[in-house]
Image 1: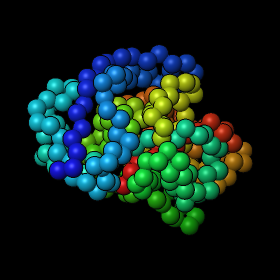
Image 2 (image 1 turned 90 degrees about the vertical axis):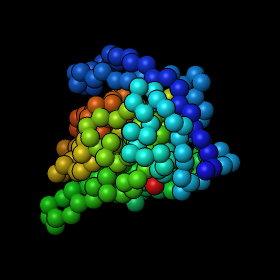
Image 3 (image 1 turned 45 degrees about the vertical axis):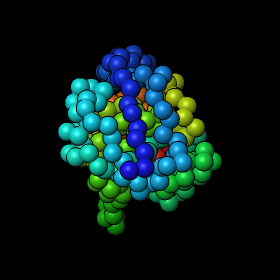
Image 4 (image 1 turned 180 degrees about the horizontal axis):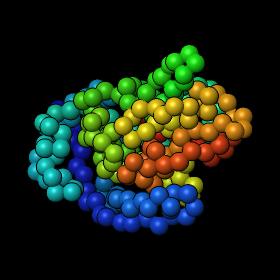
Length: 239
């Protein structure tokens, strides 16, 4: 196998924010990255490489094998965009371009899709974020912290670590923590909270947002914001 990633220790921490997200009552897991290698595509890494993680206990006391239903799986990365945007993203294709450009600018390689959904009723059409991701992958941040061990783990209402590390490996912790998602905790789109297919900032259109400081459902389903707000990041998943 081409590479082995060793994970260091998680520690529990509570985050007291302000404004809308503080009212959600989040209590998120922080992670100690002081000894963790950075998963920024080492020479032995390829997007489709099957990785064997070390046997034994992972950072929260459960075996890695048990978490992943077997020792072999596809290791993929996820990052938060360093740039922010209004809800007019150029549609799903424009958002995908933004993820790919961010990854290219940071020399990450790989292929990337946004965690973003749309749903409309006239005519009826939907595109759910979860459907773009493979089921046999584990996603890690660029500092190697596990976000989800597989797709089912990603959409079970919690993630294992915040997605607050951007394409350059920088950790973000500043309010308002906003990420455009249009996606509920199960990976699907709600009705009509997508800035008119992520193309329009006209008042009173709104879009569903997540909080990059969240590990409960608020990571993707925290509140709605006016589409004209230009402080929304994107989550970008490798696939």
